Length: 383
Image: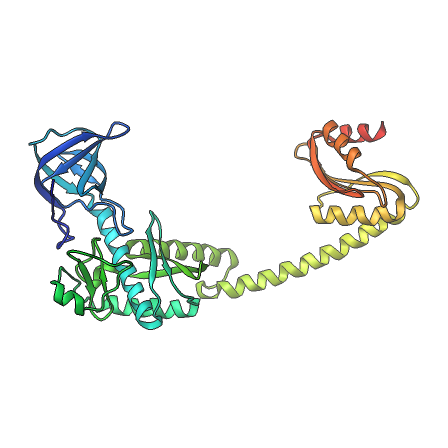
């Protein structure tokens, strides 16, 4: 059953009249409806299928299977029924912006660096492009600037099916060898690519392209980006975040990075000062407990690393097992226990079992946590 694809040469068709050719049960209370004509685009080329309504009934997805274009609906439509169809235009236009932006980025990367687009995925929030070669952040920043300059030219986008002779002479991009009729999408001076997807009519409709990240992927890179309304929404969120940081740091919006750098330097200086004070405190505690044998020590508000350093200091002087705990009855306690030259493994298992704890380490040193009150810990060590 052949369906006339109204989106094929005009992606801006939003509504149409058609007739049901077939309706078959699907899965989970859905039906697959075939029409004689439609403007619903099926999933393909990295672009998801359209959603919308048929006679007010929800179209949950659109896909093509064995040459049939299936509208996945939440109710049946009898063959022969006349239908009024309407796509979710806001969703479709968003996808057109993403897909067209991807073409322009891929076209410029291909012409400047010779790399191929070997993978494309359009997610609900971002889209990704996999390129066959390495691109740096600086190179992609220039690609982004050039794409946006060309978007502003508002050039018309051409979609057509060239004849076999014309097709053979055209330098179009394609991920695979194609047979039969080939649909080409051209962004003049930027990209010419075989594509089945929907696109804007003019580059100005894309609005904006923003590249978010690049990472090594196989032998090339994976680029994450957003286009159009998604790019505007992303930059709005970035602006709001920066404005809040600006307010909290009492810095001008364009000076927040410098303010954060100063704050980081101040924080590092304070961390070093705390480290030094803790070292002095742990050394004093170690002197106090010299030759005391097995000891149990409670310290206030120590990080796991500080807890470890404290236990190491004390175990070097006490001449026995040094157990250091830090925490509260409400939140539980972290611990570090050291016994130079000893084996704490069986002892540690018994400790964790008795005090609802977990942890481990080397034979002579272990760290962990317990969910027990201080009195319970002291009573266990007093046994």
